[in-house]
Image (tube, rainbow, N blue to C red; front, side, top):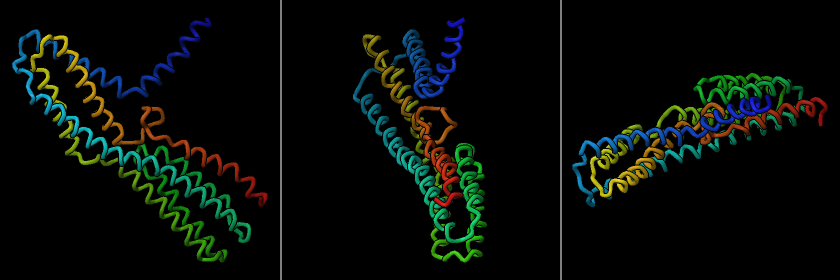
Length: 271
C-alpha cells in the first residue's frame, strides 16, 4: 500500500514537471521529427548538396535573426515583470494613505479595502484571459473618492489618489497590450521561414561520415527550434499558474492581498 501511495504522489509531480518543461519537451519532439527526416533523406539518396561556405552563412544568419527577435521580445518580457510590482506597490501606497486620512475624516475604509482586494483578486485571471474585471474594480474606486470630497478631505490628497488610480489603469492597459499583441508579427514569420529554410538546407546536404552530419543537424536544429519556441512562450508572458517555468510570477499580488487583510484590524483599532 505504501508503494502505491508513493507512486500516486509522484504522478502529480511528474505532470507538473512535464508542464513546466514544455519548451524543452516539445523541442525534443520536433528534433526527433527532423532527425527522422534526415535519416529518410539519407537512405533515399536525396542529399544533393555538398558542404560549402554558404551553409555557415545560412546558419549564422539564422542565429542572428532569431537572436534579434528574442532580444526584442525579452524587452517586453522584462517590462511585464516590473508591472505587477508597480501595480501592487501603488495599491499598498493608496491603502496606507487612506488609512492615515481616515484618522481625521469619516471614511468607509472597509469599502475601499474591499475594492482594492477585488482588483487584486481578479488581476491574475484578467492578465491571462484578457478580461476587464480589474479595470472595473479600479474605476469603481472613484466612488470612494467622491465620498472623500463630501467628507471635505483636502483636494491635494484626493488628487494624489486619483493620479495613482490612473497609474493602475495605465499598467493594466500595458499588460493587456503586451499579452495580446505579438511583437512584429512579420518578424515571427521570418523567423519560422529561416528555421525551415536552414533545416531544409541541412537535410539535403551530404556530410561524411553520416554520423557527423546526423549529430550536426541535430544540434543546430535543436537550438533553432528551442529559441523559436522560447520566443513564442515569452511573447505572451503571463500564463495559467504553473503552465511553464518561464511564466511571470504574480506572488507579489498575493502578498499584497494578505497585507491588506492583515491591516484591517489595525485600521479598525486606529493603530
